[in-house]
Image (cartoon, rainbow, N blue to C red; front, side, top):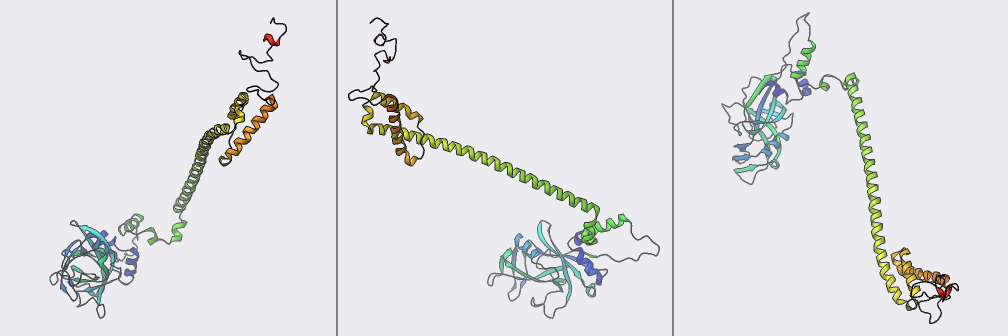
Length: 364
């Protein structure tokens, strides 16, 4: 594993904090868990065979706390009381190594223990296992807590995970004295150092300095303008949708109203025909019946619940109107209006002057 890969797992702030006390820190990257079969020892049970699934390795990495102690070899139990840490875990990551998902931990080794031979790693964790089971599968829910990491030497110890070995070790950022009179660093060297150490702008400059930079200010203003324009576009689109929905609602309402009127008109015609049958006096005068029937085309129904009352009033009004125009028929004068001559066979009225009966100038 390259130095940059190891440093990429550690926060620059963590490295700065370490360098305050240890200008030349020793960092070691180990595999502490790997997808596949492991043969760990369980306190109170002894050797076991475990099958670690991908989800368990992901959970192991997630629940490996930064700052947790690294010990030299395992103790009889996972109890930290009385044990001397030789370092601490300062970084972690998930990587695929030879096709297996692996949990990687970066340990900072304290200066007093740098001389130790360390090339294998083993976790100390609380894991839920079946009662007295010597073989079982480990899933994500089984990983309760990681309490420590034991580091050892492969000549003396075999890790539970076959691939739990040392990936890289380095002594990072050794300080060098600058000879008197020598130029400190060029701009390109500063940029290169920032890139190699994967530092963020906020790791180098205070937030107020970054915000006051002209380029950052311009970018902030551009983002504000973009957000403002996006808001205006969204508002306009929403307004257009509202207008379209209102127009659609109006069209549907008009169609519905038209359908309702058609239905009520049909019901009115049926009720009208039935009403005529209930009024035998109308049938006694054919012309009155025809007049009232023809007038139905002008009838505009209102409330469907009051349709019968409206029809009765309408018929009464038409009968009255007819009588105002032609008078009431005399008894026995069926089909004729009172005071008006009955049409002859040719269909002419008594007022037609072309009829010899009504014109003395025409020979009889």
